[in-house]
Each structure stands twice: as structure tokens, then as C-alpha cells.
Image (cartoon, rainbow, N blue to C red; front, side, top):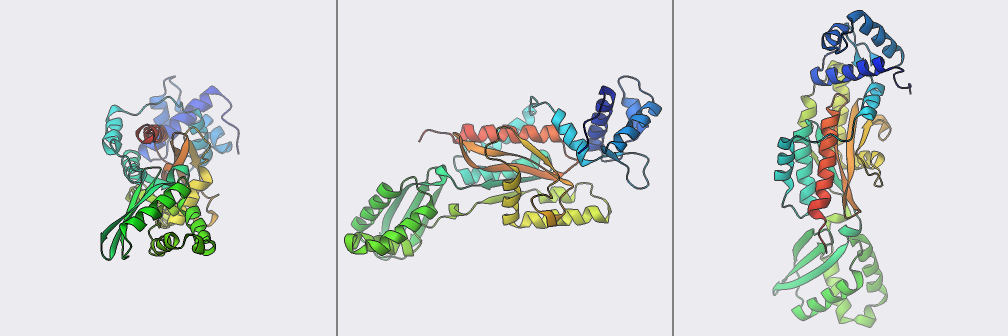
Length: 351
């Protein structure tokens, strides 16, 4: 990894090249920079600095072009220099708040977040929910609907409600006993752990509880305690933004196809975010070049900007933008940070 630019002039010119390329998508030449130079630098002076930056690994020259484009190292340097104090425009804050305010369900928040992130960043909005304390059981409720139908309702600590109608014939009094048993014994357990323990108790203690355990076994076998929260929910929005992002050349198109295929496989999306977003991190993280997590996927020309989503200190999932390296970093980092804070504010209600 090259060291940072050695002098103030080099740093200023590198920053100008990165920002100009992000804005235009065209290789940046010395004359363009000279016209915009606040110090009145000549094109010849800028050319010499650009040659030094290229030798240091920060710039490369596309075929048949007089201009230069930033390398991954240039983007990494640029991001390190960005101030964390930037704020979203009032317009974008309004878009986010209009999209998310009033949502009390984690899954719905994540689904809407993926959409609004793609809208604001012009990249791909990605969100992943995770299992954890607030995705654990809060309570269950069983209600007899008719002779052969029972409504089973499962509520998690995050406020997610799952209900399903089962074909069972169990008296309401037995349903109440079963619900009381589960709520008293398993509140705070993850759904997977609860079902594993119930299966063990059904095997070992059936004779002890007899009628109660028989009711629970029937409910269990019919899927009353099944919940999609056992697996991570993945929301991906805005893949079309990648198709419209100035990708040129056969190699660029191949990389784009690889990324689109990756986004279609939820397991790979979970792996990507899991590899690069540490649940302990406080700030937004920017990762340039995503080939470490999925080496065979050829994703070195893509960037991930993301953060964990917390409610009262508990990590509920991750939210991120994935896009080409030519991305508006400051703007996207601000959006991710703003939504992560809003997530905590809107969903962190006293239990």
C-alpha cells in the first residue's frame, strides 16, 4: 500500500482529481485542473505532480486517454481525509424521514431503508437483519378460531409479529395453558434455541406433563413456533443503478455481471456485509475493493459503505450501499450515518 501524498500540493491535486472524476466519470487532465486551480497552478506543474502521483500508485491512465483516473488507493486516501461532520441536505433528510417515520417493525424498516439508500446514493441499498436479543421471543398467543382452526401468534422483542392459522382441534383452555408455559419458560430465548429445548423436553418430560405437553407437541409439529426470524432477512434495492453507472469495456461489464449475480444470492450478500461490517464499530465504514470476502467474484472495483443498525445498543442488522468506486462518498456516508441514528431513535422504545 503506498504512503499518502508527500506534500500539500500533491494532496490537493489528488483530492481534486478524485472529486472531478466522481462528478464527470471522465479521465482527468492537467488542463481541466489548471482551469479550476485556486492557486493558479499551470498545467505543466500539475502534469509533473500527476506523474509523481501515478508513480506512487494513486493514478492510472486508461488506454487512449491523456487523462488519469484514481486507483483504489486514491479512493482510500480520499475517504480518510473526509470530515465526518458533513450533513445531509434538508431535501434528503425529508425523503428519509418521510420513508421511515412511523415504522415500528424492524423488517419493514430494513426493507424501506434499502429502498431509500438506493434512491439517495444512486447505488445499491442493502440491509440485513440479524438474530439477537431483540429478535428473541417476547410472547406467544394461541386462539381457537373454529373446530379445526387455531391462530398462533408469535411476537419478538423487536416488535415483529408472525401469525399463522393451523389445522388443529385443541380447546381454548389447553391453548391458554400451552401459551402460559411457553411464555413463562422461554421469554427472551431465540426461536431456534426455544424449539431445540422444547423438542428435548417433549422427548424427556411427556409423561410428567401429559396433556399440556401433548398440546404443545401438536402446536409445535404444526409450525406454531416457526419464524422467518431464524434466518437473516436480506433486502436489496437498486441493482438497476449499477447497470446505469458508466461501466465501460469488456472487463468492466464482466465485473458488473459478477456483482449483479452476487446481489441475487442472499447468502453472498450476508457474507459481504458480515465480512466488512464489525458490529462493534461506531462510525460508518468504507471498504474499497470487495474481493477479500468473495475472492472468486471479481469485486475489486466496487465499494461498500455501511454501518451496523442498533436499537438501544443491541445490533439488529446492517445497512449499506454498494456501488462502483466512482461514488459520492461524502454524501453516501452521511446518508448511512443518518439512517443508522434514525433507526435507533425510531425503534428504541421502552419495552
